[in-house]
Image 1 (cartoon, one colour):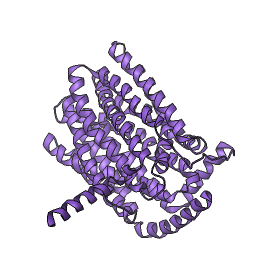
Image 2 (cartoon, rainbow, N blue to C red):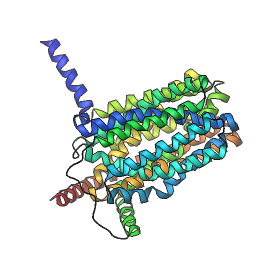
Image 3 (cartoon, rainbow, N blue to C red):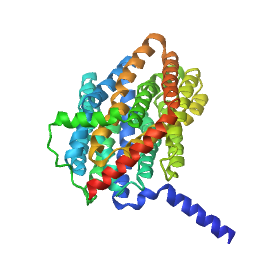
Image 4 (cartoon, helix red, strand yellow):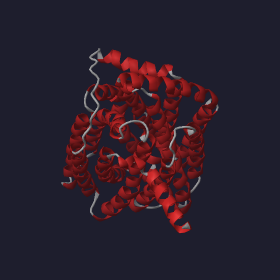
Length: 432
């Protein structure tokens, strides 16, 4: 009996951890998304190595990242308007198709031996423009796939788990493929992986949801989303916390090829190992968070994870050992995942359905849009003072920003409870 009880509790624990997969639409989406994400991480690693091989410059690594993500900063809020006005599934079918074409073009150029730095800049820029439309639609689409808010937190965490599971698998495969066949084959496999996402989207059926029929001026619509985020202290604080993470934690990602080659004296396999190791930490953190049933207390996780992230970045800057770097990257992956996923969860809980696309567009701007600025600045700094010093600066800046959020937790909780009550009443009124 005791053995049966333990087995029953174990199965119940696992079912609770993956409870969002009970929703058919979400399960189908996850299946396609996981395949595509592995391809994306393969491309991320291969592109970084290609740029490093062509230029040997950390400034160029930061500049290409800047080029890929600056369109997100400029246009993702407008993508939020698109997400609020048009069926999100249709928007995603178009964006994922464009991703497949752009990646296929990069693969063709690289495999033919004609790839030049300007090609990478152009394709990165166009990919960033498509991402500006894709991100808010994909984030806002999650709530409709799980049919309400009961499993929303779990769905968001599992989505982060997929991203980081792919981070574990993708770079490891890419490290071997780059050393064996070159970067082009990674780009080709990523292009083909989008077929999985397109197939899953075609098979998803969303009922009970209609896009907003509000045809007000797009600028006025955008301003309403901004006003909601700025005037509500919990949303504004969460956006600032995400911006701090995006600006400063981006340093170690963009500098990874230089860190692996010049500090750890490794190669593409070393870089794949480091990215994969960070993915292990992120998956571990995600699975722990997935067991939570309530958003209560998530603000503590945000504050703690942000502070630890700063400390770990500083520690990473002082090592020239692959083993010690791995020991830093495992918890670093946990802290970055913990902060970003819990912030996303709270923003979604606190935002009314009719504003969700625009607010998630602003969240994406803080998350991805500011990343290129941090990447460019720290890439430039690394060229001037060295990679370890640049990592130290990023860690110290992360600590300063994190302490500000930690000192306002009491006020955050009070305002968040009031905003959640208003949001729930607003959603109920809209549905009836």
